[in-house]
Image 1 (cartoon, rainbow, N blue to C red):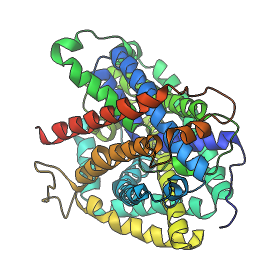
Image 2 (cartoon, helix red, strand yellow):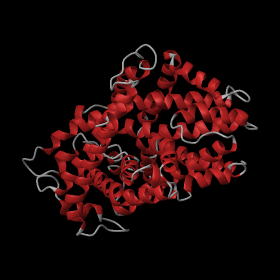
Image 3 (tube, rainbow, N blue to C red):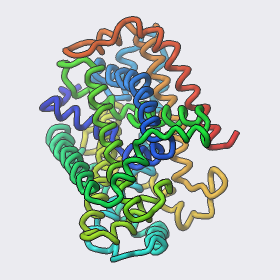
Image 4 (tube, rainbow, N blue to C red):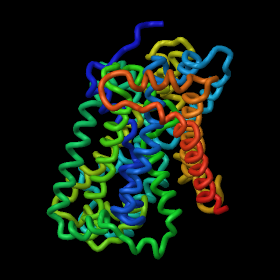
Length: 458
């Protein structure tokens, strides 16, 4: 097998691994559920679950990658005990990468579309929310517009990966992530100048004990646990692949805490952009996804230089989603190179067309196939694909990592601990073995059960 590439610096690994975790899940979703579930109370509960569950799971995925120096395609075979068949689980985890990209590429295209609209002044001036909503529905009803933007972001992502790890993924993603953080700080500082800044931050982060009168504690705990779990995108090897390119200078708990911290900072600061704008222009802040494409567009149109602020906001959103897109594309390419023993260029070319084809149900689900409701009600193919990956493959993939690391037939906890504690930094104590074996699996099972109750109302 050819010599494996390595990152040119630890900063490259940290920023790109964080970029994989930083996506629409925390930029788009985190601020809204934090505001809805008690502000600072929710944030504290979320941080608890992030450290208690998310970070340990992240160390496992990183350890498998760094020890094996392989993608999902071969990593489990390299590490598991002779005669074990645990590696067959890799196939549905590999499938998860394609399921995720089947809708994530479409949504990333939306971000590009709206970023261009912002900078070209198409948000208009003093645009009412109903007009902004009609424009969003017009985009969803236009397969051509969505297809062009989807192809553009998929082509961009695969072009970056085609250039290789250092010349492509690291050279492009590292400055893009730095620019993402600069945009985030820039937009957050602008929010301080808005009239509703104090009201927005109070709604977002002030402890709201009244929430217990309207929402049960179990619901709040479940929401925080789900957000902490899904924000790191553990379970499909998307972060594992970058550990295969990383050095051994730091312990994996140290690296995982840094990645989680970067991810959380982006999630928290996103609320500093969204909520002050809502309260400055008298808009309800609990409207979920429609707030991004409808309400915020209307708000930007009422701002002085709103075309610029809107363009920068959706550029920030595009960078956040594109960083995840590139990370998963790199994982898919590495998997194909290992399974089929093919070149990077050929893997890129084939998968470019595969991603375009499998994205079509999601894209057409808003127009030509809008009368098809896979989950009942008004659900779309996007809802179905999101349910498959978020409520099934990701948590079950994380559960497999736990079992692989702790079972004797798998890699074994002692081997995992040796790899995870290699290098400088915080080390994982041996007593965590029983916590990993018995507590984390129960948490994951409870999470999956809650997801099914939320989707099917059982």
